[in-house]
Length: 490
Ligand code: B12
Image (cartoon, rainbow, N blue to C red; front, side, top):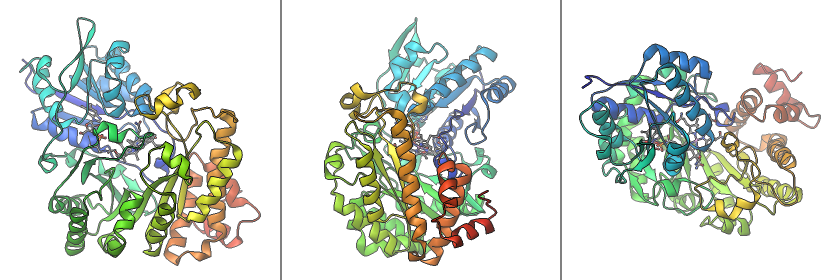
């Protein structure tokens, strides 16, 4: 029997150059999982290879040096090939290592992964904390793997699917290991000194959006933490790690209005000094019109709304339970309160054409968010939309399943055209935004200029954005401001 199991948690070195333009984001899943592996007696190390931009060779060298008993990695769909490679390399340099993979892609593709990937020993399905604890006990020799709920593993060459694990009842009882993170890495770029955290105030989603994976992952359930505990955590992070900006990882933090309002009231009362970035639903913003001033007082600075489409037909196809006109009103309200509004529009269904994309861009401009991104519809192999789009799937390499590279081939467009139009759509949207920048309040103008610089320097849209910023129609004062921020447009 081993005494102290050595567990290494490695984020796959995957990058799609989108969200990374805004900052460097911590792995909250490993922060929680490390806390629970440690609680079960393991020695744990987190290697955030994604944020550190490590190569596979560098990761492998670290594995060889540390020689973990257990290597954990994580896979949303786009990360799956890199997650597998991390496991393969680990087995090559340290054959006794037990490899474990979790997260949404692994959860739904568990049998396929175990059957196809000899370098992967165990898949953890669903919520991971308690399973992690049981795994540490089992792999320390205190129990058999057959007793661990929530895993799929290999025995005698075949995949064994253990019974499912129930969702955790008390999210406040979970113990994230904040001390195991290298905090110097995590920064929110629009604020030069913005020490960044990701915080979870709730888990789950009760919606039915057919293009998304999250309602399926959480089986259309929702659990909220106690507002007191969330605010306590924010204050703790501010005090111990000087966190100035926190993104809520929640799919839908505002589901329960009374709870959400209590959270806002407590943040105001406590004056946590932490700025919040969050995602929510159009309908919840409309519902909260009378308390949006509390969002602002509490520190919410940026609200992302998944408007997804401007046409009612498309909203219906995606089973978005909302009305197109509501999206415009919700964005207006966020803007009126001085918060940054961000939306995305999902394009590329089989009927998409160059004209329909142009119409969506015009409508997006009319909606008036500060930022809009035009994403490619992506049929996760386990999402409801998959069956409907199956005949149009033109790309099967999961690395491209990142919402920015089209993998679905519309009837009247090639994939290359679709890619070009997606980039153009975002370019046109921002061009229009910057042409009318003077309509925004001064603080927002300043923020938008910083965003433009970040998009040029760090994102997959860099080329389009650079061309747009240098375009003859761009007001000279904007070029001047970008110059002052140290950006030369050549
Ligand atoms: C934070 C976040 C990020 C962070 C990730 C930081 C990090 N290193 O983890 C950043 C901003 C980098 C990011 C990037 C991307 N993201 Co993201 N992201 C999220 C978000 C908002 C929250 C995830 C989170 O932290 N949840 C809280 C933790 C506690 O839950 P969890 O991750 O599910 O982990 C639990 C279980 O899954 C399980 N588990 C997970 N991993 C493991 C591993 C092991 C070993 C075990 C035992 C268990 C286990 O246990 C955990 C604890 O219970 C989700 C949407 C959402 N609201 O969930 C999207 C989401 C995960 N992202 C998504 C996408 C598509 C992307 C991008 C491709 C987008 C893009 N084009 O840029 C990129 C890919 C990464 C990259 N570098 O390019 C999709 C994934 C869809 C899919 N089915 O594949 C989601 C679901 C958004 C959406 N609604 O579509 N993202």
